[in-house]
Length: 282
Image (cartoon, rainbow, N blue to C red; front, side):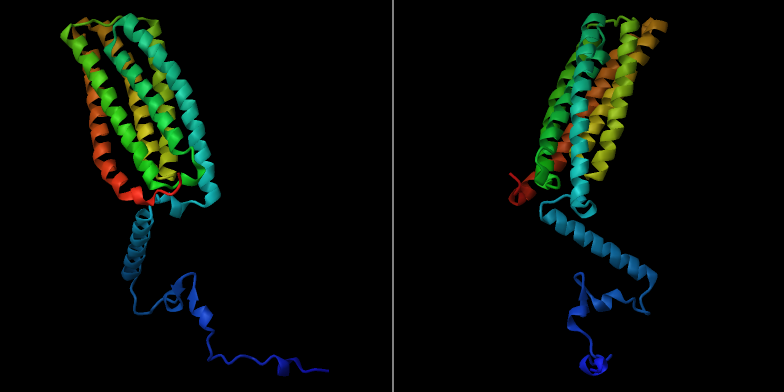
């Protein structure tokens, strides 16, 4: 009977397998904590490594979500973003038509501003659809930045129209007309847009998508404008002397959208140029 111990010699414990010296791309010495290393040094080292990883990911034209999400998770969130965008397009398109009707029938500058913002929400959701239409480009930084630049241009154009209408109504002292239809549109619009904004913010944070967050910001502005229609109409009903509140809210919303659009372009245009050589999904 063959002695197994003779045929399978026990390896010398002093001999170390060279392949075991490196595990998962890290040195074996790094895996064992040094007794002289303090907790503060460990935290600082981990933060430095995280910053280096983020920089290298961005340098390859990818978003930070590529390091956080597994492939199947990223595709799952991408599909959710597409579904939310389609729902947003349908809902805000209906709200835009209703708000435009209220604006022309009741001479409401804030209703016109909301209608234009709802139209902007439709356009921004279409841009998000384009952004996530390509499954392979879910982490593409270049595609993300292009979508944000387009959103910035749309924001600028929309703000000009809102400001023009609101200033015209203030200059001509156009008085809004208040009725139940105006109240109904205001409440439905406000609640719907706020819900859409929260969902878009959540998805945008997971996917580290500035385009989705911008779309959510636009929906949040729409929700605020929806409630502002209700507030300004009620104030005008109780105090007709405050007729200018409606137009003033329209001017304020227009300025907010203008400022956000300018900031978006300032942030994103240089990034489009930096990442154009890394686009490989088209």
